[in-house]
Image 1 (tube, one colour):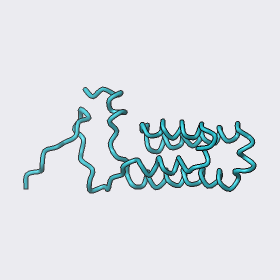
Image 2 (spheres, helix red, strand yellow; image 1 turned 45 degrees about the vertical axis):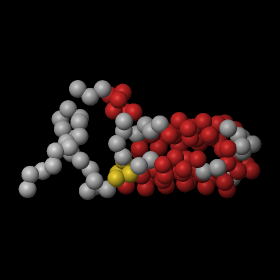
Image 3 (cartoon, rainbow, N blue to C red; image 1 turned 180 degrees about the horizontal axis):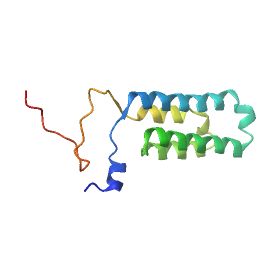
Image 4 (tube, rainbow, N blue to C red; image 1 turned 180 degrees about the vertical axis):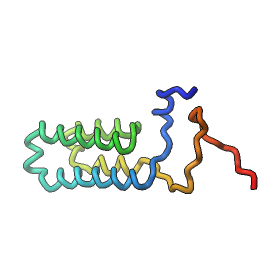
Length: 117
């Protein structure tokens, strides 16, 4: 049986659709931060709330990814928070085509066997 903790650590690439959706969320947060930087930058609770909401939405779309921890830490640093860290995080997540997907066996392992022609 596949350990659920190890399944989270060794997450497989996400589909392109989910990555595009996550990229839209990340770009909208980073653009909002840049456009309203003077106003939101002085109101830290609103800025932090936007980052928490973005992290939760991205985790729901992409699943937990370890680079998300680095993006959250970068967003907590005041000078670095201006950079588009959420967009960079989503771009680092590997994506896959539907043709690249390998079927899973019932126990959660990848089916590595080639089909017989």
